[in-house]
Image (cartoon, rainbow, N blue to C red; front, side, top):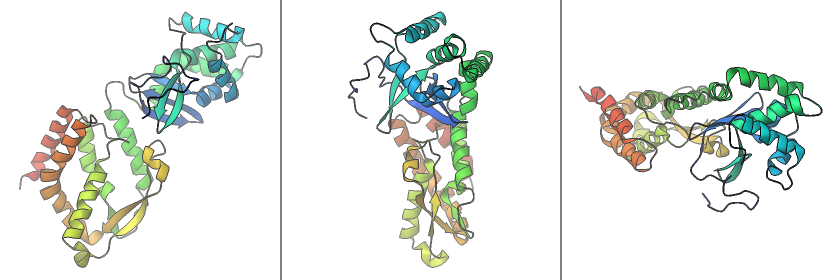
Length: 304
């Protein structure tokens, strides 16, 4: 991640400490939650809710600190302050996959919606409808519900991302073969329940797949069970890995399924998974207590 800030973005707008935790496009409206739990709309999403072209929102954010302040921006900033919020910044610049994303915070979103609904010379019925919905449900609760975010912890986001992955790969594996992702679903579920933040930065089935492929070749299992095949494995569009969809993943003959499950039970869970989880703890992607809980959760399966 670069530390260089574009000249058009002030240091106050650019935040290196925040990341986009979860992001969705719902009915054409881009929205999400930052890593500190702050809900947001992107520029296109806010424009859609206001019933205006996205260039209008871009102009508002661009003229936010102009001197002298234009009447429209002055009024919107007054509406932000009326909510008891800081009106100094119209957006937060968050870098994701090398691209700067303009994140519009909740107070600014509500102020812009209120302006287009009731203050603009030509009021927008769409803005009025959106404003009433958000005022009634609460901006934060509305966004949380739409993107499946649970403020009490990461697991709900992990569940949603896991479900999204399942829906994309369910019918892609050829008949007569099994996929690593489907077969280790119980491992992923156990990790999520233990508090692991499974998602775009933490994909356990990749670790299992690499270790099994190494074992498959070392033991020359193709002679016993037949050739493995590639199939198209797609990630949800909000995963960085989706940029190279479809992913060429291996699937294995059903005849080898019993051998795979025995390998997982006797070798991977006991010898390799603890090391994998420890590496995720060092990378800061897994709390140490969650790793300990996950390891402990699998111990009963090792009892013969």
